[in-house]
Image 1 (cartoon, helix red, strand yellow):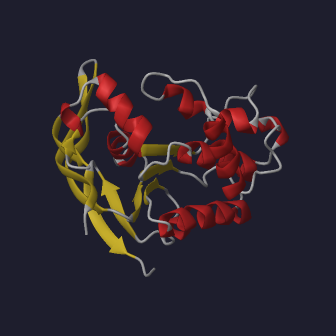
Image 2 (image 1 turned 30 degrees about the vertical axis):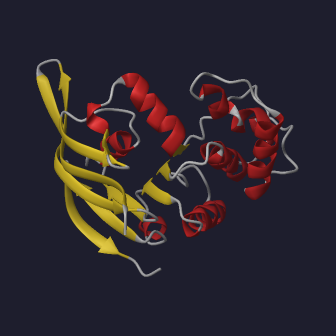
Length: 232
């Protein structure tokens, strides 16, 4: 099976004045295409740092991050931005929606940042509507975030992550701000996306959520302390 991503001996240090924090201390992981990986660990374990590096939001201090055959650690800011826009979709715990925008306008935000900043076309708008319908928001396109439930807001965030048809979805505590029933709905959406062939990398602190992934790794003190594989 081809690899969606691979990290090799990844280190990440942060200089905080007189203190150096070793957030990652030699992490190596293979992520096959079509994987659904949960990253677990306590606060300060390095799981969020790892997700940021996998999402090309930051660069490692040393080590390699091979994404689709290219070493992302060697790319400049513009190249990293292009990778994020074309290959990766992001879902955040806090949704990160623009409050004055409608559902439709929030979903289409990534389209405005494509290379060359091309204007939106009728095809683009039709795709926004199609993706909104896919996550159950077809009748909410004109609503603002404050008019939506938490689960609906997270669905907007998922639709926004999908709009550029990414191969990989990075989900940072996607059910963290939701009640258990709504969180279960969001997990059903993510599992469906995974079944369609997308690779999903998800940070969670909840064992019940992690068990819905295909496998999990456990971070501790900047290292992978263990790995589990859950039945599909």
